Amino acid sequence: MFSKSCEYGIRALTYIATESLEGKRVKISDVAENADLPEAFTAKILGTLTKQNIVRSLKGPTGGFEIPLDKMKQIKISEIVFAIDGDSIYNGCALGLSECNPDAPCPMHDQFIKVRGELKTMLTTTTIFDLATKIKTGKSILVR
Image 1: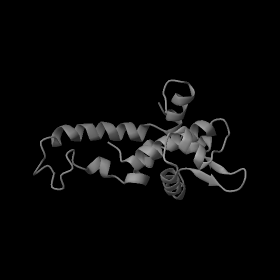
Image 2 (image 1 turned 90 degrees about the vertical axis):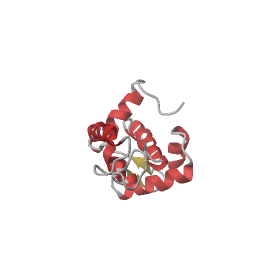
Image 3 (image 1 turned 60 degrees about the vertical axis):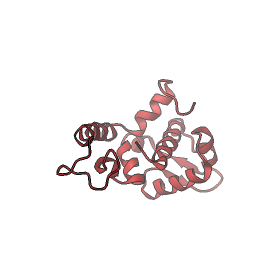
Image 4 (image 1 turned 90 degrees about the horizontal axis):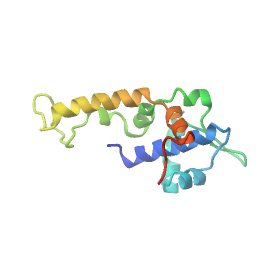
C-alpha cells in the first residue's frame, strides 16, 4: 500500500518517537538497527522529514534525532505519507492504471474509493504518538 520509502519513514519515526518519550535522541545507526532499516536509505528519508519539520535533527556529540512530545501528539501519519509520497495514495488507481476515473473506471474503482476513504480517515486521525505508545506499552511491535 505504501512505498518502501514511506514504510521506512513511518517505522523510523515510530522508533524515534519511542525513544523521545524517554527524553533520548537517537543516531541514524540506532534508528536503522532498531527499526530494521537500511542505514543509507534511512538517512535519506530522515533528511526529507527533517526538511519538512516533522522530526528534529541536532548535530554534535549529544545530537541525534528527536520529536518533542507536544509535536509528537500533533504529527498525523498522513503528514508523513504526504512528505514522502505526496497524495497519490488518495488519488491513484487500485490497479495502477493511468486512465482510471469515474467515467472510465477500472474493475476495482468503486470498492477502492471506499477503501481510500477509510485509509485517509485512519491516517489523518492517527498520530506518531499513538504508534509510539503502542510500542512502549507492548501492544504492538516494530520489528520481528
